[in-house]
Image (cartoon, rainbow, N blue to C red; front, side, top):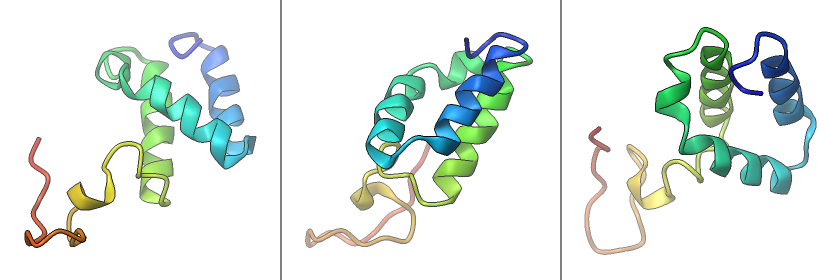
Length: 84
């Protein structure tokens, strides 16, 4: 569905309208396919939506608190930049 011309909009709408628990489950499943989705015209729409959600604060799935830029973890180590 994520690579389909029309079905990708369904996936985007579901991500917008579902509750937090459902969104976390869906995003965890999408996460493993992000690099492949970037190669498809319609998959790019899903990648953009996921990036928008991450920017809006649904980033715990992708970068746990101790790995996010500028966030100091509860450990004794200083915060650090995530390098890709």
